[in-house]
Image (cartoon, rainbow, N blue to C red; front, side):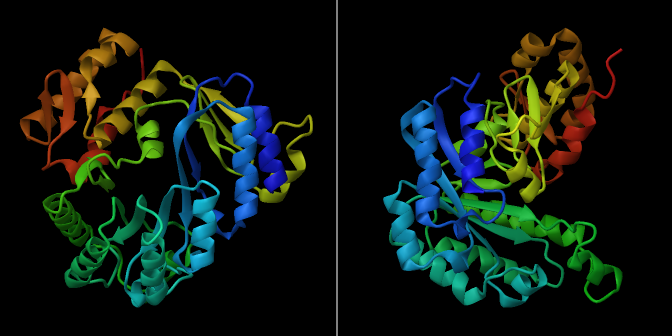
Length: 345
């Protein structure tokens, strides 16, 4: 797999001349790679691309993979940011979500990582069936105890054909309660903002100056290369996605057979993506940019569709920028969908 990733990196160089400011190891469990394997990938990037002098280099890690020696090795090869998949500090929650680590390993991994890394982000999940408001409050408080620079929090979604979906259908556990999810989200926002975190994107909170450069690039529509099975790439006008199957990916890379599919985005596609990403962030949707990028028809449509949400104080306009209000944050995905343009006649 590492050799295949190296091959793809070399193949992707053509036509990509932008300086690399963020490198992100994610999309699975990259922390199972050895430090030498990660270093090999980083060296391939360094040899073939223009890399800025101080790039953000993030590794997603499971808490149970973070031994003291592993953490020291990651730091030594140039990883400077860890994104740790904590999810919850409660054993029952972890078992329900079929996580591979324990409550004890969550704390130990964070404690060890905090001694070496300044830039640490963790993931938390809210809206877990059966988890009380008190438990969620304790999850947030425990996260705050580590004085983290960044916290990501996501509402639990039940994917079809999963064990969790099966348990809910059989009545073994309760379904997700949207009302409880909303209350937990609002507690999260209030508490983190009171403790000095900026709610800069719907699911992301950071201390001043510690935004995720990687995630911010997605939301601001910058070009990126995705390498590996299922990875997506984007150059501003075209999106591509790789073969999903690991073995097929490895066998195909380096041959004359295509290893990815692609689509050229229409103006409607690009407008919809701009609306979706912009409304999730503190930066909002620049109405002047909508007009210059997509034309007056799109700007007029956006303002027309937005009016009812402006009237309900779920959206507001600040210096020609359309933004989500505090009241509307929890509903932002639904509001965005209503602002999409489905057909351009």
